[in-house]
Amino acid sequence: MIRNARQYRITQAQVAKLEQALAQVMAGEERVAFIHPRLRQAERDALQSQITDLREQLAEYDALRTRKRPVLHLKSFEELPRALIQARIAAGISQKELGKRLGLKEQQIQRYEATDYASASLARVHAVIRALGLQVHEEVILPKPQSMVAEGEEQPT
Image 1 (cartoon, rainbow, N blue to C red):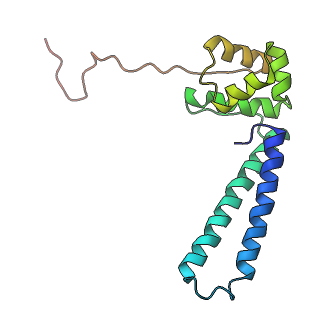
Image 2: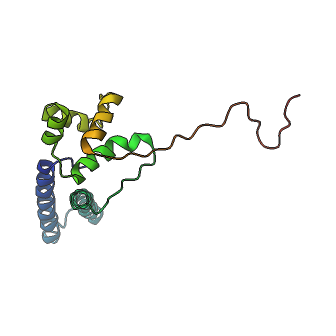
Image 3: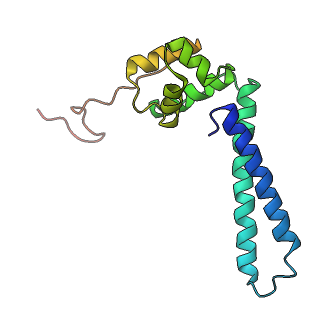
């Protein structure tokens, strides 16, 4: 996942290099007759796969920056850190600016995001939510009580 403008530029450069490498592989195929065709195909497929993955990351970053996704849907609580990063990007707030809003250094925000907020306290996560101006609506689904009897079984008397 691309987390900032610097990573975005680096990813763009990586795509350009991989596309150039793929073009070279495609252009030089006749000259490499001693390499098995399956190996040449595997090399082409690997390069194309990397290009596709990086382009998807660029497209996701672009979609966030242009606010094409106004609501982020989470399937579980574990997805909250990624959603916080996406929300920051969508809001057009840099890591440096978020740090200022929280009274932290940019490097601390970078560490939080690099580790998906693993070291952040719940209070810090709540502060990030407030600093980003987010509205988070969640459900807590309670488990069935253990005393419930499975369907078809008789209850003990």
